[in-house]
Length: 284
Picture (cartoon, rainbow, N blue to C red):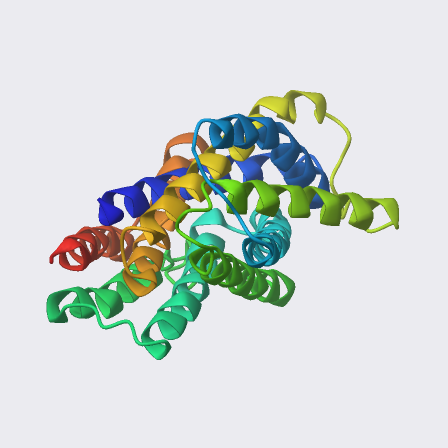
C-alpha cells in the first residue's frame, strides 16, 4: 500500500508541476504558487475534518518546515520550468528530492530489504535518463546556469518537505499538510508584500486564462501531499521518497502530449527503469 500511495503522489506531483510550469510562463512564479496553494487549502482543510487526528507542537513545527521547503521548491521550480525545458528541469530537481530523504532514512537506521535497496539506485538512474533529450544538432540541450541553480534549489526544498513530513506523528491526521499549506501561503504573501513578486519577464497578456492551470496545479499538488504523507505512515522514508521522486515521468509525458517536447531513446529507457525500480522497491 505504501508503494501505491507513493506512486499516486509521484503522478500527482508531476501533473501539478506541468500545469504550474505552464501558468508560470504567463504569471510570476510567486503568484502561481500562492494562488495554487490558496485554492488547494480549503480542500485540504475539508479532507482533514474527515480524518480523526491529534497533533502536537512538534507536528506543527515539522509541518511548517515542510511548508517552507515545498514553497521555496515550487517557487524555484516554476521559475526554472517557465524559462527552461520541462523535460530537463523536472528530473534535476527529482534527483536531489530523492537523495536527501534516502540519506536521512538510511542514516537514521532504516534498513530496507535487499531487493528494495537495489531499487534505490535504479530509480535514481531512471530519473537521470529522463533528463537526456538531445538538441536538434545531436548535442545536449543547454540549461542556463540560473535555471540550473533554481532546479537544484528546488530539489533541496522538496527533499526538506519529504523529510519534515515523515517526522510527524502517525496519529496527526492530515494536520501536517494543512499546516504546511498554511505556512506556504503566509511565506509567499510576505514575499510578495515586501516586493519579491517581480514578474521576472512574465507578461500580463493572457494572464487571466491561466486560472485553470493554476487550479489544476494546486489540486494535484494537494493530492500528492496527502498521498505522500499517508505513504510515509505505511512504509520506510527511503523507499517512499524515491518512488515519489519519479514524478518527472508524468511531467515529461504531459510535455510531450501538450507541448510537443520530444521523448528520445534514453528517456524511454528511463521510463522502463522507473517501472523496474517501483517493482523492486515494492517487494517485501
